[in-house]
Length: 266
Image (cartoon, rainbow, N blue to C red):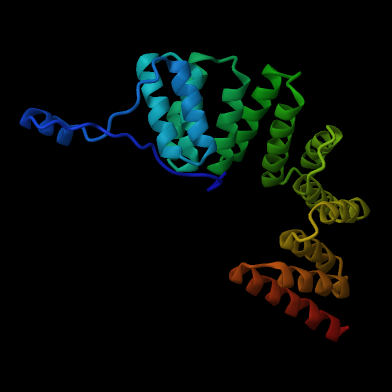
């Protein structure tokens, strides 16, 4: 969830010629615009979040909370912006408050699951996402995509690869043609011995995203595990040619060298 968008609120305070007003301006150099209602602050904060202005979004959500301290969605939204800024303690406090105010809000439980996954508290993350699904089993497809994909990632982190593959299959069944979903299911299949299915998913992922260096690298790793070093070298070559990340290139070159060495031994 990092660095998709960003920047700040701009506000101007007029300063008069009177010394009193100058002193006031120095004490209060920035004045937030008065949107009038908590709902307007929620909307303006969301607009800033979508532009990457996370600090500005937090300021608007905070103003909305000051107007209505029991508006659960504002705490949820503010937690999202705090997560983007890696302010995890503040985010956890806010999302807990949202759940306290609105315990049947599936979105709040899902948001806390995202936070717990980020904090590597995977068991807690899974429990929260499961609670989200329990509260809203018939969610709209776009929400189902997010929830089941996230749960699949959490299950992979817990090494429940069979469960992860099932969740990624739910996402794919909703007609989502996304390379990362196929890639993650391929990785899950690879861990439970479903190699044909894994390679079929890698092929679909690369069809959807033919210049993704990481997919080539991850398929190469599976080839390497299966002692198919010639195929592994070819995929490492492709990953190296595509990447712009020096550290990733060095890692891929090292793995390629190991596969080449295995080929010579054979």
